[in-house]
Amino acid sequence: MAEQKRKRYLELQMEELKEAHADNIAQNAGVKKENPNHNAKNAAIAEMYNDAAEYEADLKGFEDELFLVNKHSFKDIATEMHAAFPKEEERDFLVELNTIVELGWTDLVEVQKTHPVEQLELIKATDFTQMIEVFNAKFPDYAGDFEAEARVFLAQRWERIINIKKEHIKQELYEINTSGLKAKYVKRVYQKYHGLV
Image (tube, rainbow, N blue to C red):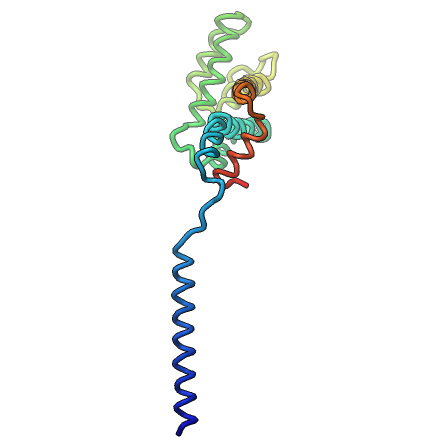
């Protein structure tokens, strides 16, 4: 009988220990460890890099878009961009691409006066995905390569934007350097502060 009481007493103690341990685990799970990089000094330093980080993210996106422009067939560019960038719902890549080709051809027709107005009117009236076929069918004796010329307009547009973003990043890094801090240090603090590394 004494042995059973002792055994029951030990079982109760074990259950209490398990419950206490489970409560301790639950409390620890509810409390997040505070990031040692989250302090006022690091917040101020990380704030200095916000604009540069935004420009870097934009730059990466534009470089990816340029890659798609160069990689895919002309009629598939807009579809591939929508597939690659589903979060950019507000951008209509088809309209954007069509506008770039229109503006480039407008320059050839109205400024340089090297191409007839009929070509520009056809481009304006044609959907981007059908542009090459329609243009080649309407102007079979065209001396140049319409697709190559249109691709040049598209590539130049993204290259200009990429160069602008690179210049913005340089300016931001210059401002950081003139503040007395090294840009690499500020970038590292930014990444640690935001948990990127």
